[in-house]
Image (cartoon, rainbow, N blue to C red; front, side, top):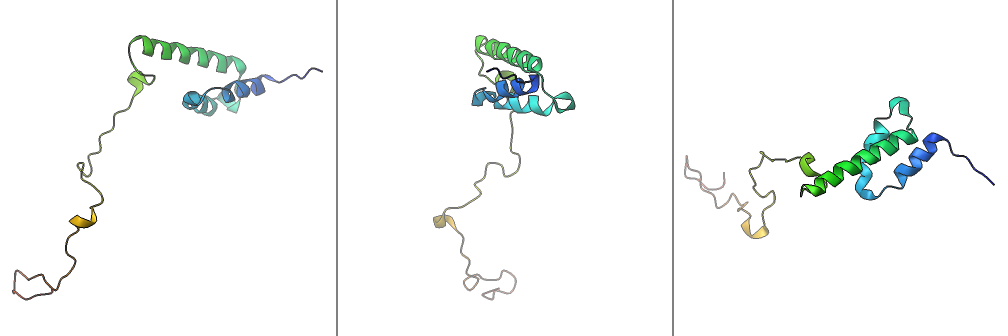
Length: 107
């Protein structure tokens, strides 16, 4: 018994068989396919190019992401903790607070 799979099914099968570390490539290739169709040749060429790129990154002593790593600096908050520990909470009691204007307590 012989079963023939068309070109797009074979391409999707190849993409589905890639390891998890190739997920980004798989998703981007699927999303950028012209007219929404993926060919076996397109998948093969893309995989070979990515394998070469990853091999060069390893040869240069870089990680798999290499120079593609995005550095992010959080400028909001300045590294302050979002949550304070219970021991550091401020007093919530206004009864003990003294007004700096009229010297009365509680407001």
